[in-house]
Image (cartoon, rainbow, N blue to C red):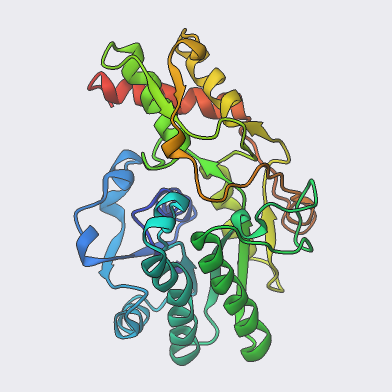
Length: 323
C-alpha cells in the first residue's frame, strides 16, 4: 500500500485528490492547520472524512512539516496548501506571500532532509501567466503575474523547479487553470454565482452583485484535474504540466448557464457592483494541455455545461436543507 501526504487536505482539491488516492488503495495522511482541525466539511461531502489520518502542521512551521514526514513516511507528497483567493490576496498580501509562496520552500527543504526519494507535487496556477500576450498559454509561455496571489505562486513554482534541478528531487508543478466543483469556497465567483442562483430560486434573495462580467476563464472540474496531479508523480521523469480544457467562457456566460439551469433569466437578477472590481484583472485565460495529453494520457472529461449544472444542483439542495 502506497502512502501519500496531502498538505491542504481540507480544501477543494485536497478532498477530491484524497478520494482519488483512496480509490487507488493509498494510505492517505492529511496535514491540517490546528485552526482547521474541525473543518472537514468537504471530506464529509465526499464521504471520506473517516478514511484519512490527520496530522497537525503548517507550511510556515518547518518543525511541524518534519514531524509530519516522519509520521507519514510517504512516497508522495502533494502540496495544495495556499491562501488561494485572488481577492483576499489583495487584502492580505503578506500572509499570502508567507503561506502560498515561502511555505513551499519549507516543504521542499524538509523533504530534502528527511527523504529525497519522496515524489513532490506543487499546485501552481494559471494566474502566474497574468494578462498574457499569447492567446493560449502553455508550459513555455512567459509568466506575468498581476496580483499578490500569482506572485506568491510564482515563487513556489520556481522553488519547485530549482529543487528539482539543483538537488535532483522528483519535484513537479501542475499549472492548473481555473477548476471548480460543488465544494468550491463561497469566496470564489463561480460558487458565489451558483449559491446566488439557488437563493434566488428559493425566494431568499432577488439580486446577485458581481464585478467584472467580461473576464474570460478556462474552467474545468476539480475532480478531473486531481487525476492529472496523480499522473504527474507516476511517470519516470518529473516535468511541469499545464492542466486545462482549452475552452474559455466569460463570467457573464457562466451566469447565463447557471441561471438558465434553474429556469431563471440572469439579466433580471445580476447587477454589477464597481466595488467588486479588482485593482488589476486578467481579461482572458486559455490553456494548452497538449503535453499532459501526450505524456500522461490526461484529458478533461467534464464539459462546462455539466459542471455548472452540478454546482447549481448542489447549491439548490443545500439551500433547501437537503445537501
